[in-house]
Length: 122
Length: 122
DNA sequence: TCTTGACTTAAACCATGATTTAAGTCGTAT
DNA sequence: ATACGACTTAAATCATGGTTTAAGTCAAGA
Image (cartoon, rainbow over all chains, first blue to last red; front, side, top):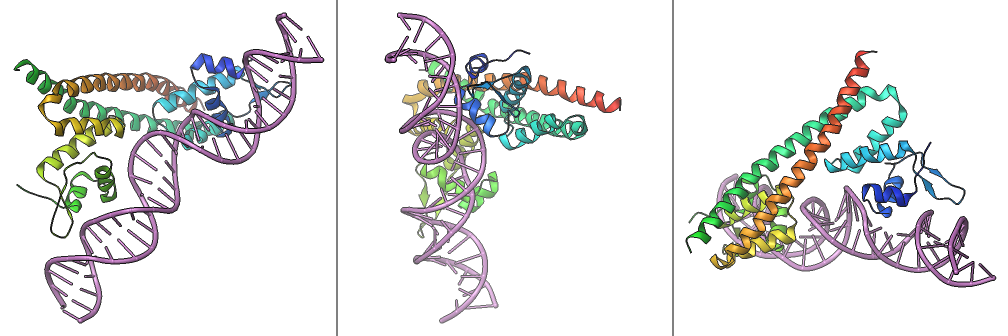
């Protein structure tokens, strides 16, 4: 298996090292290995988990829920149903948020038009 | 002109009164009037500003920027250009965020499919 | 008049999600 | 051997956006 350092993981996903350490402490990156000098080794599993964590963060899932999800991933197949339910609910929350933003954008667009018009007739 | 109490404003937009007081203190609701007993009176202008503030919050504009925008609204027509530029930039930021979320949603959908399949073949 | 309910204030407190700090350990190139 | 850069830790600090608290004022109905 291939391992990468915290510096490489940081560069790969453009996440500060401090944030990666924070994520480990928060249980978002469990089972982290270390080299003889105590430095973190990110295995392919950690990198895959990290990618998942980042996806969930991009869609505004709170750390608390991400921690639960990751714990279920580690726990294995017996938690498939729980993970399916969680992701299904989360998907709906994300769709709702996108709808809210899209709707608010209409009001913003309206103002942009109004400001443009005002600058024209000046 | 029609005035409404903080309680009515709170009920209208489903925002806690404490939050409305906080917004006023943060400069998001300026020029607030008061009755003889010192209670806030939301004029139609305050209600319109509040609606704008809520729209900007729904699209994740930081309070700091909302404050600047509202100050420009109060300042009047001489700030039209500044407001147009700010809203144009903000619109792009919102579109970027929606794109990021939509993209992350693909990874989430993929997992949902995988979990569903796994539960089928059980 | 007295109680109730809605309101007021400033200041303290809370939650979330990091980031920074201070002190120290390694491994490698000069 | 020593200096450099990359790494380590726990704990303190920060930013953002509110929420809660404690003490008090006021108007209207019983």
